Image 1 (cartoon, helix red, strand yellow):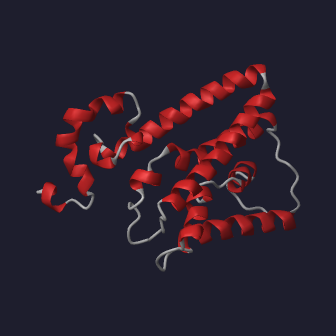
Image 2 (cartoon, helix red, strand yellow):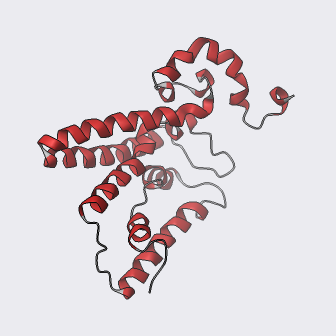
Image 3 (cartoon, one colour):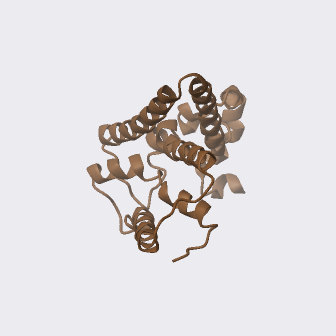
Length: 197
């Protein structure tokens, strides 16, 4: 019954793909292959998480010997992820469409260069929170301004594309930095999830 009626049609081919490509899931590399060859299509994110975890361990080992090099590599990864997302978006002339969000699945959606930005921001945030456990003094007017900017960016990223398609160049920007949000983590941590003005 679900074979003929599934909204996520790639998910219904698991009985075919898992027999042939199960080993990709074991090695956590299934996100590097086309979704038509994926076993358990939803597991692409597990592969991303494992790859990011390995990168984080390598960066932490480097930071114990040369902190500046590790920070440089971290920001290089962040910039590289943005540039690769822009490159692939422009190369394939991808235009984001609300009606077809999985159109870019094989070129952008499940790829590590598309998803590592928020992970890196989380690593930076975690380091800053670890090194500075006390809240910085942010005067209420600045706090309100930062919350307004952050909320505005989030709303624009989510609802700014609601009416249809973006142009090729706006799509390139959107897919490169659209998942990377940083400021709100600091405010939530330091204000205990309460906006204090």
